[in-house]
Image 1 (spheres, rainbow, N blue to C red):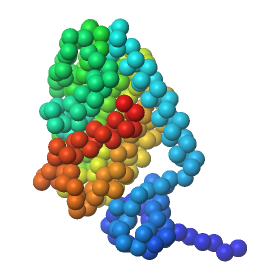
Image 2 (tube, rainbow, N blue to C red; image 1 turned 90 degrees about the vertical axis):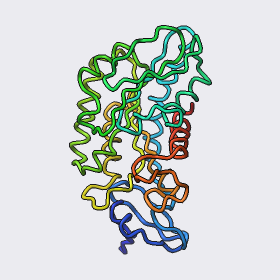
Image 3 (cartoon, rainbow, N blue to C red; image 1 turned 180 degrees about the vertical axis):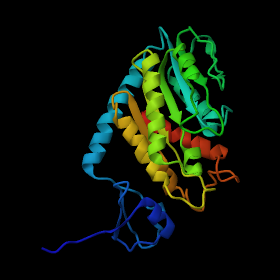
Image 4 (cartoon, rainbow, N blue to C red; image 1 turned 45 degrees about the horizontal axis):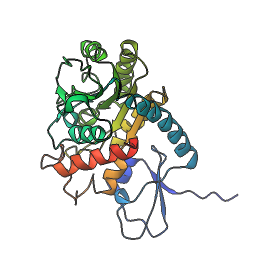
Length: 292
């Protein structure tokens, strides 16, 4: 029997070569399970990615379960305080009006108001928050710059976060792990440790949103591809699919030219952080994925 093999390689190998596939020519990413179909003119990393139907179905079921619990929590806003907590490194720590957190919170509050017209996001790098008890949606941000999966949350911070009784908690960490080229398995174990600790002190039900963002452009030599950290994040979410949801935004950034020439100027000149347009893009992607 004749065996037909597709052109294949890891995502890191595809990024390094970044060929133009012929029209209709498939290319398979061996470490992500994705494949892309050439059009005869577009570089590989800018082609849309596809995944097999079984994987899509499993991802959809897990996403629906966790997202439905999140929306059920938000639905109590008319009679009770609903807390959203944001944790991560510098992309999350940016609480300015142009940052993704503020944009996302504004969007959510347009649907689930807050008594008294509260608009501020409480910000504390030690999670030293004052719990809001009025009905409505309340946002708390404990993002810390230059942190990794092993230090973006301490036990003390987790204990303090528990006091605000979050319905949903966002985690966006991994960029600095990738920059330092920490082993993705270590990254995964660090996140599992943090989430297990949180689940031991947080009231339930709480939904953890685990965000795999874009590949920063200032890392030139890699042992571990950015996709390896995304795969680790999916495994972390897969351990408790009813309460953990992995949002992989990297494909949307790849389609927009990151990594690459960044034709839409989504990243700032430091090749790490985003412009206002990039933060708006990130917020819109998260809104779309969560259907809020």
